[in-house]
Length: 232
Image 1 (cartoon, rainbow, N blue to C red):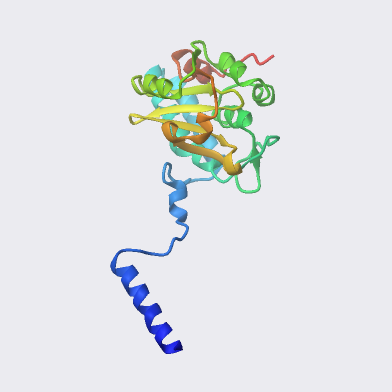
Image 2 (cartoon, helix red, strand yellow):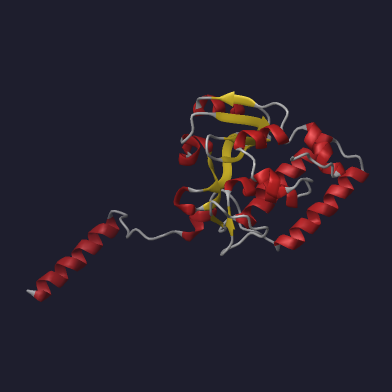
């Protein structure tokens, strides 16, 4: 009987393999499917961005070129370093990485400040989500339908937007024709995340969406000059 059971088990495995059925196992590489892993230390990266920012200003590079540089560095260099940091309602770490915790407001205020924007990251992060958008953007628009908001952004040029939800805040990134929700994801305390806005569960849990364009010419000038934002 034991021999028969063993033979039947072997046959079941072979049948499964022949039909491309494999055991469900975690696939670690999928964690970074929407963004590449960091290629340098965070400190060296920030030093490079600071040096490049000063060089862009000195050479009087066009604002469009400055924006493209900023968006590329944010999406592909700065953001990946924050993956693995845990969400926590009271998290305010100034350093990314495992064992660190970051709330949604601080994830808006901290990485962008590290890139050279001049503001008090504590005061900005502690504002209500709508007030954060009003402080950083001059063209805030309110939406009550997530799909309408996404469709509107899909028709626009590539930009980084700030979005205030009823009980959450994050960034919407228009990149390569897609709209991504970049935020410290409280669902399963995942932390910094980049997910398609249309598929984001956290983005769906809101009746209102306050959206403002962050990477405007005005803000690019402030970035180049280190202009202080008022967060009182």
